[in-house]
Length: 161
Image 1 (spheres, rainbow, N blue to C red):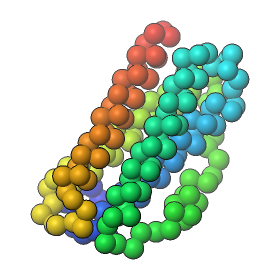
Image 2: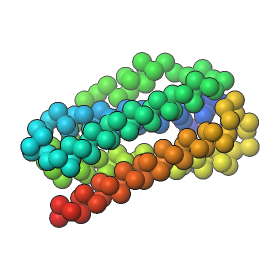
Image 3: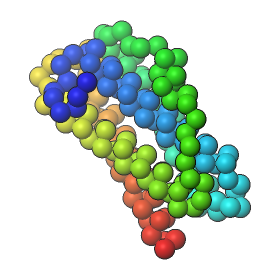
Image 4: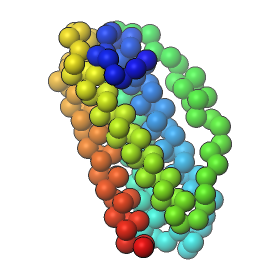
């Protein structure tokens, strides 16, 4: 499935939204892994707060996407199957810069995905079984929160240099 073409059906939209759910699961899992790998003292209050907020935000995004998938007239993949896609352990650097770079990469990837998905929905002339305005509103809200996450991580990285 490509985001370079308009979304052609409820089925395709459901799959794309589920990809977003996987991205959010990855962000959440990686944030918790960093938090568990390093102690609060090593991370510092700002990074601990950043990781906690990222995990909570990703959980919220997943739920919002899941609500949209539930409204679609499509047969989504069982969530248990989606979880298997992110079940592998994520190896990453555990120093300060590694945590921040990893978080920045996660935020940027999610932002770009939602930006592309919004463009693909907007360029589509298909009538979805979910209200298009509501769909775009949810996606635009998530994209904006991802953009804010990119900015927050970037500011924290700049403050540490």
